[in-house]
Length: 366
Image (cartoon, rainbow, N blue to C red; front, side):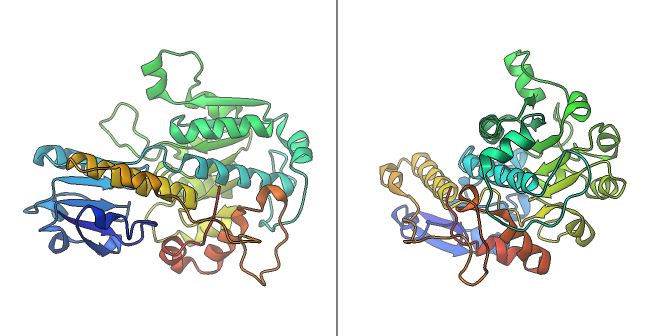
């Protein structure tokens, strides 16, 4: 069997070769010529799997080692009989960790649910005191309560938020539950709004493309913090900039961007935390995605998948610290394993290196 695999997927080399002959290539460079003789692809979001890539190829199966699948033209694949899969939930804990550390940074900087906040700088503090002081009287809304959103809910409960709103129209319809609220209620009640939806477009029943648009921001009542670690196109860039400019929001935390890897420079300067689409980039989450993608490929071709159950991140080095030696950051115990301030500063100072920061991401553990 021949496989073409994105070379930036961690923990892949040495394992994928058990399935057959492997060609590794950066995701953005995987083209029609590369895949023409391949039986299977294992990709990330940087490879658009559509007619242009796959026409006249031998590809029978595609595994995306990601939660999202908006880079896969599902209609075309169905037409051609090409089977595909993604890895739902593989990095859910990692994204929840990212949202938690962003919230802790907001609290540390004195966020009161209103007014602007400074650029984040790490420092030691007591998470328990912050929780009691800043979160107990706040309302957090989770928009999209799937694998990731449900982990964010549990994290918010642990932080001690006074109220947690769940907004997920597809799940509400499927479950017939009264536990969900409308997006209208979110705009009216929330102090923090965090998005965890897939990217969907019309004619789907509940499209999420530009879910947060001008009309959404104009309905906000409590000047909330907005967090987007789902897909960049869920939040309309121009509308978000206007909302920050007119103080309809207290702050924004942006990990996913429209037009990646090209970051809107004006928006970059306005947000509280800006990171290069790495919320789900823990070593643990990446190992999960690699394991799931390889196992799915083996199953499809009738091969033994047991060997891939042992893919785990390497142990942390002794005296591990996230920050490189010499950066001089002091971090609290809560942020010792991950603090988004370092990723924010890298992107802020060199946004043109978005793909470098993402493709060569430093070791991070949940």
